[in-house]
Image (cartoon, rainbow, N blue to C red; front, side, top):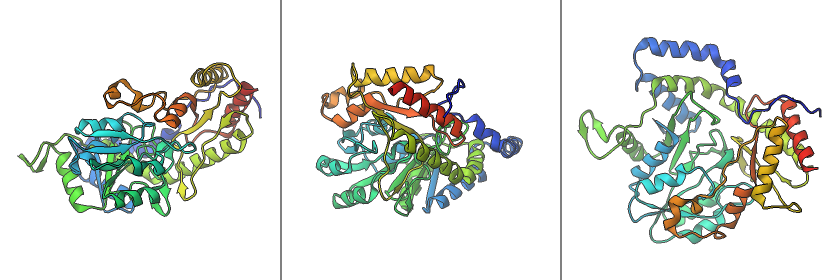
Length: 382
């Protein structure tokens, strides 16, 4: 492996766009010329294709992954006095929407190898007020949905899958988002299936939930100007829908490229002392929205977080750009002080926040760029 002076980006969506530019440009110009920008056959067509891809009966497109989660909770009539179990190691939207509907997030610690919610701890967190579980398929790694669904069924709980980072991942023979009662997706540009702006979708096999979701996302109206309940305005526009239709055709290829990149990282990073590579659970197929390692500070001076940030800075000096997802656990955030969680209460999630480092990951990442990442890590750790 040869060290390079070129900068390796943490993420680059320009290269992906260049491969489909002609298709996207033609489709976007056609939409602009049509004058039909909101709703219509293009949005409906994407919903049908996305539902078919996940082998579900219904897909409801919306404005964002956050809206998808919020609408899912609303459709399940979860609100004040209810509790929803989720993970403290995720983007804030997962917990934020629970609070937004008036319910209380109950945080459960995470698994040491996948960063996902520790399913074995979920059952102990169930109370008479628990109404749902929101597992997050973090970084493109699926949660053990067999075990989780068994717990949910035994306690009569709804399961809302947060698939924001995992479009195309699967557990067993099923795509994530098709296993729980509702699946919620984000099409933020950095996702495996990313729009050129915001966007989201909800999947379900329940026709009543699907009908309610469509009402809620359209200001609570089933028929025009006749409002059945308080809703929101959450629509995917036609420009994003047509771009997503094109990208959906390439998704499996791009995910396969991500998997090859992850395998290459895995092969060489295991040889570097103090670098803990992520592990896939048997039964799951990850799609690696992020490739997140742990940087152990054992034998080093300073705290874990200080050492991780030092390593990150040294990688930056060598032209390797990285990200930290996530530097602070949700249960210790100022906004959730009222819940009464204390430092040390969810130790695995807290330690992960000190150690995690997401390496460059996108389908077009070259072997030479990966070699530069690996070489830099070896040099920093020597």
